[in-house]
Image 1 (tube, rainbow, N blue to C red):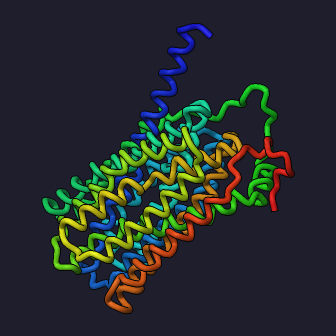
Image 2 (cartoon, rainbow, N blue to C red):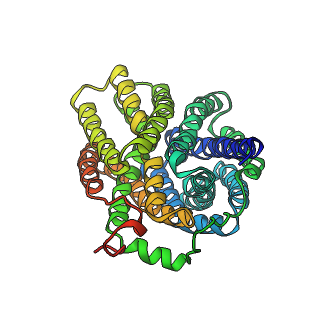
Image 3 (cartoon, rainbow, N blue to C red):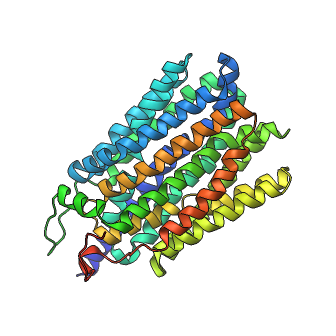
Length: 408
């Protein structure tokens, strides 16, 4: 291969990673600002917190349920087309959210429209495109860099959203936020088209890939473990600002804490992506979930102050989306990249089922008991369970396992 050819490949890979990072920055960054609207919208319309929490929970469930189909469309027709359509839908959903003055409309706009759009502009689709552009040796690190886009967006968009609410009011702020979502449409052009067939690799039908995956013990354990990640991060992203206010601290501290989560996850995504390239991905996942359980326990043990909130946010940020490059990279490592968008999309659906329960049960138990304590304790237990789930996974490629690839 000539130096010119190497240079062109490097440029293509660089731009796919860069554009993928930016798309995730807008998609996930905007999504993680919605917790700032929980209190003002609930007060304006006289809702209990469960109404807003249910809409966000539905969003996560729809996002997860449609993620395998969005991944399959990207695998079949190209990442660029799917991301562009998703960006349009996202902007429409955020714009209509502002005028949703009853629970049904809020569920339709915030839940369904934004949920479907997130599936087309987030991890399975974007990381599938990034993973195919990078060699196996550097794939985990590239996925970590791209995954950090969600946290870059969180770090940047949260203070912007907070300032928009303060300066314009929550209603007008949502209209302004929809313009940020539109930026994903032109960015989509840089995400690449249909996956190219790899040389000397026999094409595999999607049905065959699914049949192998759903009977693979490691894939099932990975899917179960990712449920816990969704439960953790969506509960925190949606309810932490309100929880901080309940403790007598200002709402602005909630925005600062979530912004710190985003900043620290920039470092965490890179670190965990790097670890996935130099050591066992499944062991790294076990360690990550175990440390999460410890962080939750310490947060409950100490009094809630500005210092403990910021320490908790920083620690959780370092552990926040580090699961994504490791989980996506493990799927590609075990099953190849031809159908990685679809296969990771199924794993991500489990993540979103966890997200649905984490955010909805948070609102339900708060309205029922006046406290988030039960959800905090559940988060500790689930972190330990997920650490155990990942430990026995066989992460070898299925075609290199001497026993039958479909494990029992």
